[in-house]
Amino acid sequence: MHTTDVAVIGAGFGGLGAALTLAEAGARVTLCESLRYPGGCASTFTRQGRRYESGATLFSGFDPGQLFARWIDRHAMDVQTEVLDPVISLRAPGFSLDVPPSRDALIARLCALDPARAEALTAFFETQRRVADALWSVLDDPALDPSFKALALQPPAEAFLAEMVTPVDPQRIHAACESWRAQVAARLHAGWTAALHAHDAAEPYRPDVAQRGRRALTNLALAMLVRHAAAVGDPRGAELAAQRFDRATNLTDGLAALESLVNARAPQADAALARFLEAQPGEALVVDKWFEVQARAHERDGEVFARVRQLLQHPRFSLTNPNRVRALLGAFVRLNPAAFHRADGAGYALWADSVIALDATNPQLASRMARAMDRWSSLAEPYRAAARAAIHRVAETASLSGDVREVVTRALAVG
Image (cartoon, rainbow, N blue to C red; front, side, top):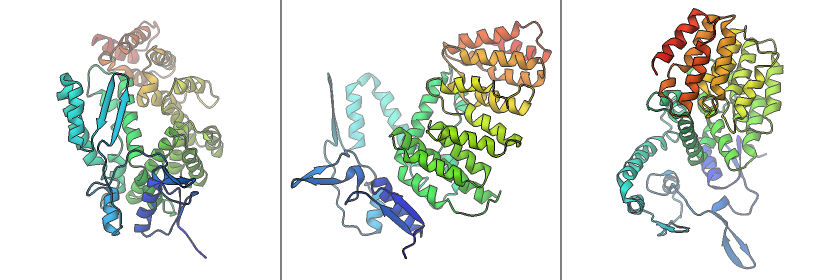
């Protein structure tokens, strides 16, 4: 009887890469493909005696030292690649560009299209090269610790990036981070698939450093795979997260799978949220995490902001419970800049309402919540004006405690 450790579904480039990496690591792999030939979008098919390419136009990883080139050399495969010139031709009204195979030649052509920006374009591509050289090899390097990989393959926190620039446009920073995550999710898809299975050993939970690092990389791999699947309309990513949520034997893994479902707006998300809360309704930490995962969810079209407002009315939420306030309002204002910093100022208005309400019963907690606006003066417009108006509204509250008044008075004095 044939036994397998891992079944890889789909023999496209990602499936082939994941299956080969797993097999090299010693796993017994079954690679499944519904068609009669491998390759996915890079394959061909025959109709009425004629051969057709099935759709892919660009490939990567075949240059010396890159992923597929290493496999071809390692396994002495009889594969020859021929690079076309141009690789692809872009055509639009009033615009045309033949993309050459050489990166340097492409940069030169782009600079020729807009000479005034040539210096900036050159600097951008040089930065991109350095970042890519550093990152693309991280996930594939067996000598690196899993915990290091998990840290290195995530962008810095958006709040940290906001401290590096002036004026601060929170939505632009969020868009840049989201673009970075999308590219890493897509570019390293095969590596994420391999990492998910390679570090997904069925071993009892232990709170030690080694296992914590493996869990961090496994859960990051899951998040990246679900993100990419949602971007291309593939329901299998959400199905994978739902399966892992069902199988989770510890809070860390269950929460990671739940976050992946919530961030992807997966059809399974609401049911998973309900089950997470109902599983241990008397466990305060579980309830806090339930609120936090929704407050920190990736914002899209104001959905997270609307959800936070609804959760303020939830029977499990109370302004008199400090941990619950931190889990919902604290996570929203401090850990979700894209949802909090809205052009219409609604996020700041909610902050002001919450600080004033909290101040009546817990001035210390209210003052800590008030400090979320310490750097308001560095915001770009229209955020800056809306933030100032919200802080003024708090400062004008007659019954304000000394703790909160000190914070907002100091904040207004800087701008």
